[in-house]
Length: 379
Image 1 (cartoon, one colour):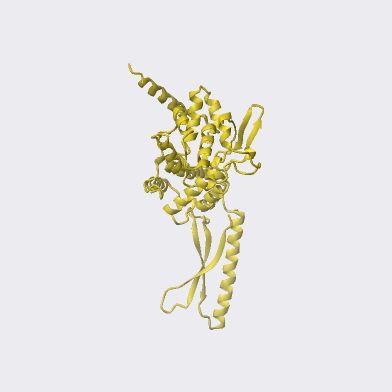
Image 2: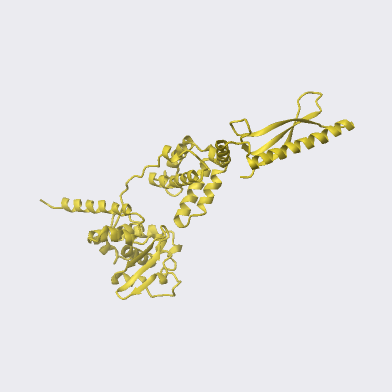
């Protein structure tokens, strides 16, 4: 990091004082020879006349300026060469300079490396952190108390949509980029303390994943829906497990015909994983007539922000009392596969999960289904 050294002056106190003292101003703060802590200023033991009238005073000012400039140049040379430092002091000096960098600027640099939903997640985290701490702060300003207070802040945020506090799992999702950035900063040498060891993540609560049973799927498919395109997109989601973010941008190029039928082959927006999902013949009907490779399968679906409201009304018409959203169709697809005895590894591949542990959540849901079935035995 480049150091700036400038000559500054301070007017000397006193009624009859006609002089100002000169000093050097460093930016950022540096560890000066013989000192332990970073400093921004060092006196030069030089002074100038404020309003020189006599030739001697003018000459004095000229010499003071020359001497001050000479000392500034010596300090510049000293910091460029760092010849006065021991190896330990040189490392300490380098660490001090790194710690003066802006954490927010660093976070934004890391954010710009992200793509898709991860980038959106980091962007939301940055906005929340800015609301929590509007001022800029350096790495040396970071501490466990600040991070614990930000955790508490996230857990108190009111959602503009629901007018209630955001879910604890959402708060955990928004705190995760801060931890990732801190780990990266530790690797790069901006910080020397592992703050992530001292500040734990926000615990994830296990939540119930709503889904449609096979009987409910059989009831909802023939039921009339207010919006036919939303209905068709939903049915394809039931038979493919695609997220909303992938369905809305699905193109005909990603509907690929093989010898045994149609497949959906695409790179997921969220994980960037490639997936290859065979489609049942009964589902292909809901794709409609094939268009150009680059055209959308569901051309106006991405413009319909009320899709979840329409889906809930559609489910109610089918006599389904569950709170169904578009993402529930992904859970329904996973449960259909597992209840049909498809192996968890194959299910994980078709869902495009980055970790098998994400898929294992559905195994617990299958166990609940078994318990419900046993409880229905009348004797």
